[in-house]
Image (cartoon, rainbow, N blue to C red; front, side, top):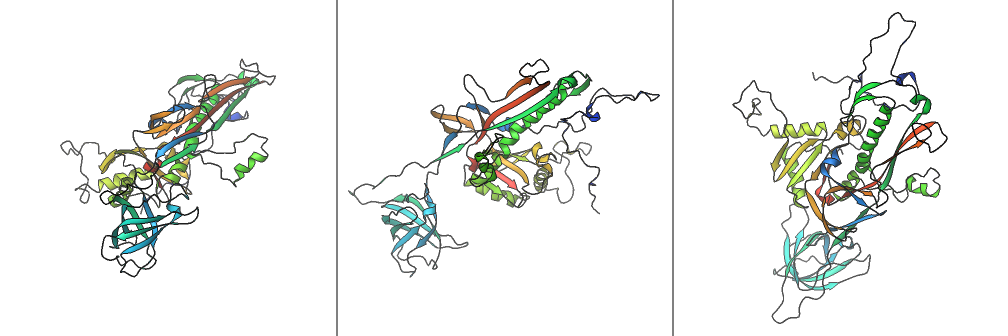
Length: 482
């Protein structure tokens, strides 16, 4: 019988910071009517280890300034154009010429015109699974239509007869060259470069820590070791320090999770009556961008080589980046380990002990850090996907991992006015010569040395204004549940 982890006792999900003074957030617990005073530990025990989840963008990206409300960049389109879902004008099976309708939805830009020109040679292929029907032809005429009306082309087949495409067949077309007679007039018309213009908007992220002047006078020291490596004794500033760490996590998770506000959404409606000054636009985070412009593996994790082959075949159709890093949760990590272990010739009859003399006393490593199959794939755990206070314990919208291409790409930078090398993922923050909004912090109030108001508190304010730029989202892969 398989064992299971009991649901109780469970892990704590409540934050440690308190906004009100209670007996729970004082450092001492003495009762003077007791005969004996308790022994107390002055050092705080780190029962959850490193509690921060930020690290992903620091590993794969960079930060650079911008000074506008809108960030725009251009990405290269395909060099060659292929049209899907085209229909044939006739199906007698004896055609030597043909009229082909090309859907307007296939045009780039949308509702533009077909990029095929007279004199070009094309290949037609039936899109039905398992079909062997195809033809090659030369374009003899092109009819360009208005927006919303499909374009048509006239072709002459190189073959003696048309392949037996069934009535209603959907065919694909791609251009492979052109052919002209001696002394003929050159190609008529030209094609413009297919640039894709993308944009994102920075959002303002804020947080606040507040302590009253009276509580600042109640000193109770405790020795701590914090996630950023600091050690020592803290007083009320322990809560301020944890607010700072939490804010730094939000700087990353907001870039990963942000979504733009839809036109008819409740957030967009806030703009009409928004006394609280809440944000009304949203931003395009990593998961949103990859879900919209990238690749998605749905229905669980790829657990066999055949599953991964389908991922690799999709990457072949995209940018084909040689090295990729897969950031995974624990389940996906184990699935990859099991998949790779199954390739071991000893997998069916037992476990092999490793590379060095097959010593059975060695510690056995049952995990893999990467593998190569067409491309290099490196695997690393992403704490954010495992943390139960974040994405680690959800069911709806569960994401198991994301594949990120390694290296950088060339993009036209609107600020620099030239092409520049940029990581595929990077953060742009608002900044100028006089104002840097990458990570601002300031103290207000009338306590703790601050003298900005008559209120007997110290307020530590945090602010950042930033957006994530996801270059070449077609090179990313999102692994999620159905």
